[in-house]
Length: 451
Image 1 (cartoon, rainbow, N blue to C red):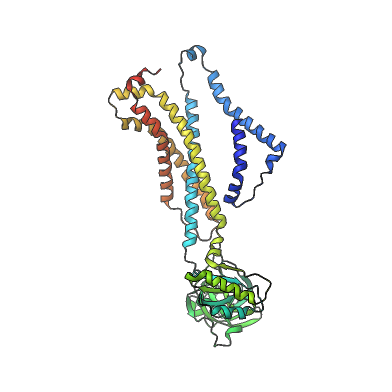
Image 2 (cartoon, one colour):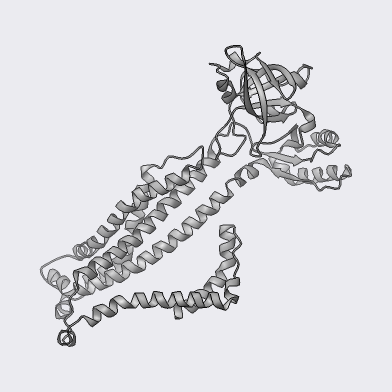
C-alpha cells in the first residue's frame, strides 16, 4: 500500500518528463477519476496478495518443532523458482541492452550514410510560389554569405511527385511507367553536387532544355533495360504532354528518407512549379546571412513570414521517432537492469547466508579469498549466461523485425551481442561481489558457529 501511494505520486510528477522523452501527450486525468484510482488500488492489492501467498504457504508448511529449533531447509522447488525469476529478469535486461545497441547503431548508420548529394550548409527557403520569388532569389544571390542559389519543386527528404511517363527502352519501344518526378531550375544539380554518370546537366544556352529535356537516375535506366547510363542518353520520352530526349543520367541519391528504397526518378526543368529556394551559405556568417534574408523578404511585401530550414537538420528530423524510440529503450533498459540487480542481490544474500558454514570450512582448509569469491559468484553468473543464451536469439528476432521498416539498415554484428552479454555479466558480478567478499573475509570461527 505504501508503494502504491508513492508510485502514484511519482507517476504524476514524472509524466511531463515521460511525455517529453516519448514525444507523446499522455494525460494525468486518471488521478481525478475515483473509479480509475479504485481499479489501480485493487490491482495493487491483488499483486500484494499474490506476492505474499508463496512465502505464506512455505512458512505454514514447516513443522513446528523444527521451526522452533531454527532448522530450515530450502526446498528444491523454491530454489528453482528463485533462480528462474533471476533468469527471466536478466533475459529482459539483456534483450533491452541489445535492442538499445541495435537502435543506436541504425541511427548512426542513417546519419553517416552517403546520400548521394551534398546537404551541408544548405539553407532552404519555402517561397510558397510567391510571384516575386525570382526577384528575391536575385537579390539574395548577391549577399556575401550566399555562395549559390537555385530553385526546385522539392528538396531531398521532402518527397516528389509521381508522373505517368513513356520512355524509349533498349528495344526502341515506348515503355510506360510511373516515375517519381522532381522539377528543378538551372544550377540545382550542380549545387547539390549530384554525380553525372553520362550526358550532361541542364544548360541555359540550350533553349530546348526548358521543355524537351529530361535527366534520369540509375534506377530509371535499369527499369528501361539499359546496360549502361550512356546507352540511355538521346532516347525519347513523353511525360504530361511534354516530349523530348534524355540528356543525362545521374547517380542514385536518396530523395526520400533512408526508410524507403531509391526508386526510378525523372528530373525536368519547370520554374513555375519550383517554390523551394536552396541557398549554399557560408558557415561562418549564418546569423548575418539569415538577418539579411529576412530584410530582403520583408521588402517583398508578402504577408507570409520568412519560412526557412537547414536541409541537414530537416533530413535528420525524419529519424526523430527512431531517436525517441532509442531513448525510451535505454531508459527502460536501465530500469530493467536495476530491478534485475535487486533480485540478484536478494538471491545472493540468501545463498551466502545458507553457505556460511561451508565458507568457514573452506577457509579453515586453506581456501583463498579470491577462491571463495569465485565459488559464490559462479552459480549466479551461470544464471546470467543462461539468460544471455535465451535473450540473444530473442533480441535478434525482435530487432530484425524492427529493422525491416528501413530500406537501408545496419547488420546486427556479433559484437553487439557479445558486448551486451559481457555488460550483463559485469553488472551481475559487481552486484554480488560485495556479499561474496563479505563472506570470504569473515572470521572462519564465527562462520563455523553459525547455526
